[in-house]
Image (tube, rainbow, N blue to C red; front, side, top):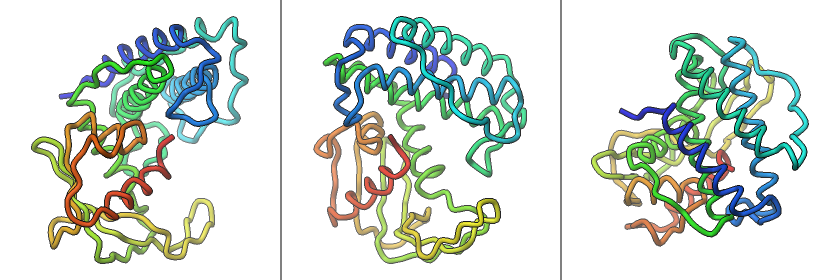
Length: 255
């Protein structure tokens, strides 16, 4: 079982080590247009945002973002924010209801998981800026693949009509596998009032003819889906366009 809080703490600490080593003005290769200053300010804001949601038991998203700390305070404020996030998440019952962007998962447990993966990916960003990359825990990475494929790419809201197509991609990491089918979403959101007509998405499948197989180690697949790892680190069999389609969908939900 993945201990999300341990990963938030450890990867958050390592992110800071890499950011200090790289320096605030170093480019972040995996985030075009960003330097380490932007990366650290982003993660600080994300951590503060989720800490507030959990600490205040918010049932709606918080308001406007805060101004990032000045350069002279950024490292210290980031470290303090990380500590506050870990403390607040650890003190809250995972089942406590709070707002999240995932309709099926409106509780603290969602943010424990989400912050573990958010912090891991941005730890990798900071390390790339510093010119190195340390190991990624395999169990966490496989769980990250599940999060992207199930909660992001294939998470159709309950009001949507989903029509599936012919392309089917199976993703495998170790003894875990996921089957996704090309699909389009239509409908009107009751919250925003936005109408969607044939919006490209994926739908979880349970079999049928597989047009593309995507296989690899947990870390390689997770980082590839997040745009932090190369395609040649994984194996693609069948229609190569299936892998490109999957990565294109992932790119819409990852940054």
